[in-house]
Length: 283
Image (tube, rainbow, N blue to C red; front, top):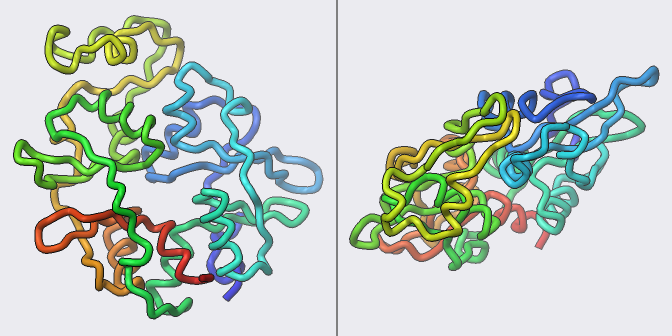
């Protein structure tokens, strides 16, 4: 199976054109839950691919407005590349969306496209998820203010966090998509105010104050100050160590999720990300 069999063709890809601003891309990420948007420039010879703008960059660079300054330099592929080969590129380069380029922009192939091929049996594997799960799980407290949890995701460099209740049990999952969904563009330079109802509370150390109480430039992103429990997904899909990779892929596709907690009984023991199971195609 080749990239051409799995990719989204150019005419069906949502793109942003140069010149442009962060709000153009933020709208797509919020409305369609994309992880990134390709940036193109129209030329006499067609659409020239210029880069990707990811939700990570929008969060990490809140002061930058110009699209050209927010683009990531990511690897590209061709329509004739095999799916296992592009899966290896995605894993090794940590690239969730790989533009398909052959002279001009032809489309895009994503981690989800490859996972869909696994789920459908187009790329067969007999492996179970245990081999590809990580025992290093990013967690937060369900009562933590959302801006704190967003910083935790940023510092951990992961797109999710598993929320724990007062007894340390898993109570939900919060993702970057959840955060983008409730982000608000701030028009004009204004003080965001305190994101925390009580600046003397346990969450109000100086580092958090620096994030939660600052002046934001035009078109910055502001997050609500409610607890993680208000924004997380409570009905968590899980797998066990013995779950086949294909079944895990099917659950990811049917629930539109990028990671699944691995449990033994009710005990959280690991996390399986969609990009992790791509390794089953080429190992």
